[in-house]
Length: 113
Length: 115
Image: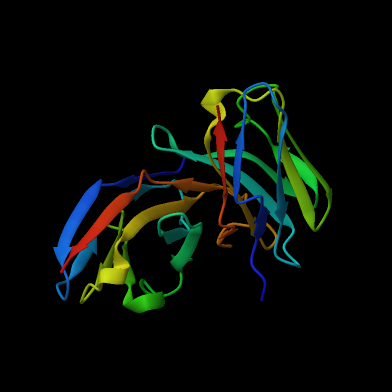
């Protein structure tokens, strides 16, 4: 069975400093992994996805994530936070051979001026 | 390109009333998903369709909830009768082929309040 754990429910950074949102996954085979972002009163937007190609995945808005099989991790990073990055971030793993997704509980990113 | 379109964006109604939420998936996508999001339970998958056929409805909370997909471009989620505990944001998402590795594209949701 697949599962995903987001290690921090809340992360606070200052504008211009790096962002690190941590995610560990569990999967019995090579997983498909995603990061989604949700701004207030909006739907979830795909940031990036990993599907067994390059282990370093670049996404939109300067975000990237690195797949580390040995650590079963898929952490999301950004070199310099912007105020507009303040949102809820979800780490997601694909479930089996269906199109279903398993969502983490989310990490709220706060960006301070 | 038009994304997933949900209507209404907001719905406020009294308990006992029937509520119908609507979704138009992205053209060409053949998998459609209904989710419910609350503070307490986070994001829950209610039901999903592949090629208009319900594949997994194990997340539907009870018989008061029903979902249909009469054609590839339209789906409804109905609650009858509605209860205050149904208050949540309901999202519709669609994807291509429903296979592993295909991302889902979300609508902006319907914020439902049952008084």
